[in-house]
Image (tube, rainbow, N blue to C red; front, side, top):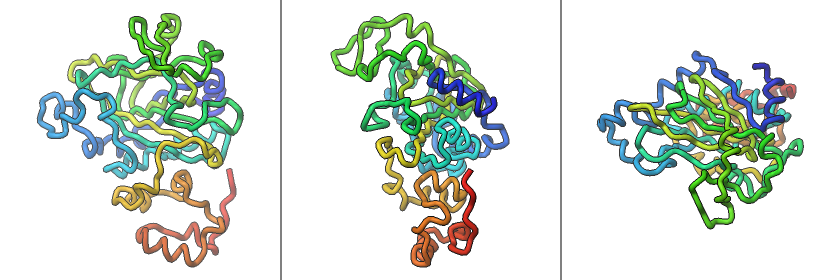
Length: 310
């Protein structure tokens, strides 16, 4: 799909589904290292992987956070196609990534069927906005084929939710109830009947805004497994959108391995000042050479030509 068409659909519906957006040749290096993070389907279902018990009984126990044990998976989070999509949807040439998670789910490990909800409660200290320059973007990236029986996310178009206030945040399935002020226990068959499935082949990207209602669904395939990433982007100046502080883990070997292989554009997404920024002085360049000894600092050198913004 053309990125401008994707942006049109994203603005109209609050989401866009891009089947096989990441081509196989760019996805395979990351997918081939999933074993560094998670059990294989066989390892989980046969009980031969000692990591198996971690995933039992808690749908969120299958989440690993950036930086990942696999540098290839870390690099995929800021793949050039993903960054181009984020820039187009947010209409901003300087986007920052504020969350990156890899997620494994296994049939019968736990209940993955969720109520329709928005993610804003742990993605911003405010509430979602549709004003230009004030939007946050989330993405699901499917790292394997995810047909309906492997629990793809379901999403609800803004056409059905445009008048819903910021609270409640969850709309419970019929028959469920809750006294929490963020939940509505009336049930809404119309909302659940209007869901759109995000099922798709490996490399599919589902882009949605923080105010979009969506939910995870149950894995029903025998001996099934689903691997995906969940990413969050914001304009660099949008300070109220936050979920992870990268500096808290920036001394870890996985972070350093990622930095050594990342491009300046990818590193800028994590908050590195761009080439030509006043931060880059002989003093800071000397320090960076000590902290990241395998990083080519040439692009940030004062003698390097300042790149043109796109």
